[in-house]
Image (cartoon, rainbow, N blue to C red; front, top):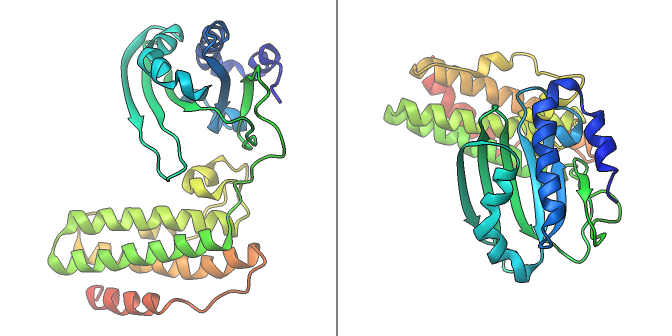
Length: 282
């Protein structure tokens, strides 16, 4: 289900002119390479939420028999997009027994445009993602209903529990006097919290957490979120962790309700974490 590439490129706002030029050159090169069977733009540009600083996030699909050859020469495709300041590439191994290898490329062009390019093996049929703009698909492999990125109840439980685990780790590092590690755990806990909050606010693609919240036209921000930020001070870190715990326990039942789930009783770990943080936050 490709769009008319030229029409779509022409519809991009003027502020994205540098990105448009890179995409157009990459697409032109992809169309002339028989190994390329799919070219997609996604993420913020695909969602229509990009600004002048946005990366070009793109996917190039090839058949399995040509993957190794394409991976070796993919830098040629990247350089077709413009003059490259620097480039880094790596092969990503499968993450599951039935998974497939991929290659990730980061490139920074002289004009300031950044490219995040995934080279992947195409499937005979694949569902489109909500942020995908399919510019080239000669074999019509992308078809069917949009692949939902909505959160599930299991996602919310996992984000909530991971947030609690990291807040508990924060207490351990504070007890040890390791402020940098405590700070790191607080930041990671907040990242999980953002996905819970996004679900509670019915934000699209809650997996992306803060990014999804900021991409939403409403930009719904939780009250007192600034209180979860702290410098490298033991008391300040403990206060910030407690504030984040409070926000999490408010957001979790709302997120579950948004998914038509019966709100669950706060995990026993939450009670334990609160007690430990209270000792550290006089």
